Length: 255
Image 1 (cartoon, rainbow, N blue to C red):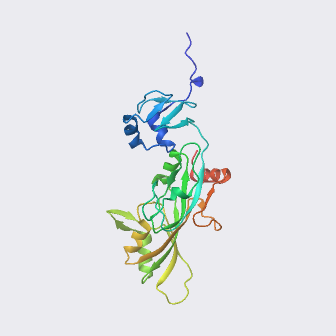
Image 2: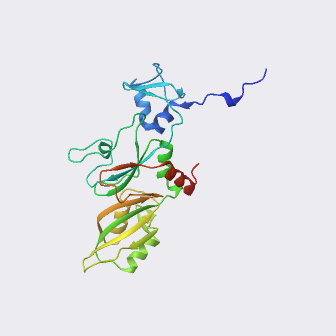
Image 3: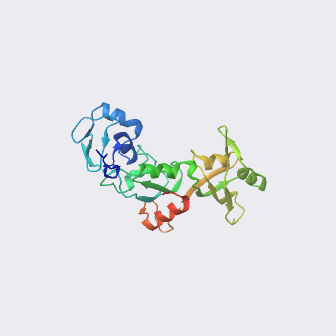
């Protein structure tokens, strides 16, 4: 008897991976959700290894979703204002960035490239966990560009040090590029465009601090080939076109 062709096999995926990939829950939280019996597939009990298919009905804490294993990847640019927090929940004095973006009908938005509360500018959101991981992982070699205002006495030696590398928490860190903005007046404030290939916590500020300089204004203006539109107001968002997504994939070798 001939074996059934693998070409006709219906694609399946483990529940844990599906929930994480489309932002419905983190892999760390999936086991807890299932243990608390708040996740069911086709109205049946499940575990982290339960296999799901496109069209299956998943219920998470009373909220139902129809599973789609191959949704179209979407990306959104958000202009984060000062004072907002990169968290799913707002704080007492600071609202969440998620409170300013449109909710999804299917799945959840996944945030890429957190910014601290005192940093504004370009923040990315996608519907695909795999794409979010690609955008954030150092191996993808995606650079981030910031416009920063720096206070203090700056000289060529300090700039060279920031380009050649300093030690932060026992690891080498550096800017890949530093471009000064033409200075006006005698103020000790200096504006620079800086680029780096990692997104560690407060890394831009800490690099300048290593040279006894203080960043008092920080704006992310670019993430890879995605640029913060000049006409996108603070608190505004814009979907990235398929053309620009395709351009990004070609530049960074993403299938």
